[in-house]
Amino acid sequence: MPTSPDKKILIITAPSGAGKTSITRYLLQQFPELSFSISAATREKRSNEREGIDYYFMSMETFQEKIREQAFVEWEMVYDGKYYGTLRSELERIWKAGKIPLLDIDVKGAIHIQQQFPNSSLSIFIDPPSLSELHRRLAGRGTETPESLQARINKATFEQSFKQHFNSIILNEDLSKAQQEAQKLVQKFLSGT
Image (cartoon, rainbow, N blue to C red):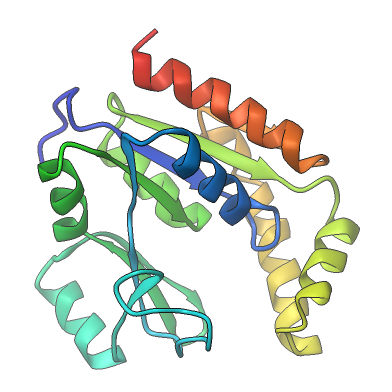
């Protein structure tokens, strides 16, 4: 896929529960030139999620077929048996619309995208204030079993070890401050300064 300067990509990544979705939504409101890149996923759709809006939900077989076809720019088995990925066609759809894809993806996927688009991407790592705060946030969602909560905390610890690989790190202790910091970084990236 070409990496011409007009094909910019904005990457927001973080451990689960660090606030990347809240910051992503904020950035989409602030910058009309951004467009949310919808990821593909093999997990079950949650009651509040919509096909083609939140995710492209796929069966394991369909997802694996797309892997074989090299239809993904990046993909990972994020949790046991649950695949997530960014379709090449999704990035092309956004670029054709004259917009810049905003990717809200896991840490490994973010590293893969950044490696493929080193000169046309901005990657921002959202860091939680502490693992205990992350645990509190995830437990507060009420969507986790004790086992899945522990798996997410273990994964977060691992993911934090990669934060230096990204262009910028934002500590999300206070959401509005983190959002403003992200806004400044994105403004600079979009204006090319």
